[in-house]
Length: 284
Image (tube, rainbow, N blue to C red):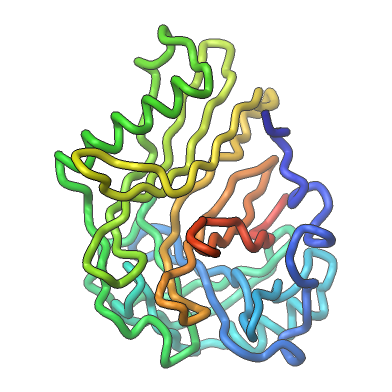
C-alpha cells in the first residue's frame, strides 16, 4: 500500500533526492530535459543535472535559481539534442520559457521524424557525447504484447487483485526498447486497474524475454484510494539514456500526484533496477 500523496509533492525536494538542489551556475555538467505535448505544442522541463551524480536543478522555493536556470538553459533559440530510444533522433529549439506554479517550463519546436504526442515522450540533453548509439524504440510485437500481458496478470494476481476485477485491467502504454545496447529489447509498460469504488491498482514494469515468456526486471506497484478530485500517482515512461556511461540506459519516468507531477530516474545497480532520483515537475 502506498499513500496517494507522494512525499515529493508534499515536501518539495528536501530529503527525497540523493543530492540537494543546486544552482545551475554551481552544478554545471550534463542537463537532462523531458519533452512532452502534442505536435506544434511541445514543451520541455528540466529533470536533472548530472555531474557524477544526479542533482535537482532547483527546488520549488528557489525562485532566483529557477530564473537563472531559465535565462541560461531556456534562452530563445537554445538548441538541444533530442533523445528517443536511447539515441539521438533530432533536435529541439527553445522558443520561450515561463513560470508555472512551482517550477519553470519552456516551449520548444522539434526537428525529428519521431511522432511524439500522448504517451510518446522523449528526452533532450546538452551533452554531445551521450546517446550516440542507434535509437531503438518501437511498438511491441503481438507476441511480445501477449507475453507481457500474461506476466502482468500474474503480478496482479500475486498482489491479491480479485479475479472479478481483472477485466478492468488497462494498458496505459507499452514500449519495446533496447536499454543495454545489446540488440535485445526490453518491454517497459504502465498498467492500471480501477475498481467501481475508484480504488486504483497501478503497475510500472520493466520486463525482458525469458525462454518462451517474459520475466519482470522491475515491478513498481501502487494500490491506493485517490482523493475525490481523482488525481492519480501512476508512473509513465519517458525514455532512457546512458548518462553514467556504464552501458545500460537510465530509465526516466513521470509520476502523477495531487494537482501536480514529478520525475523519477531508475538505474540498474548490481543487476537490479533501483529508483535513484526523484525531482519536481510542477505542483499547483
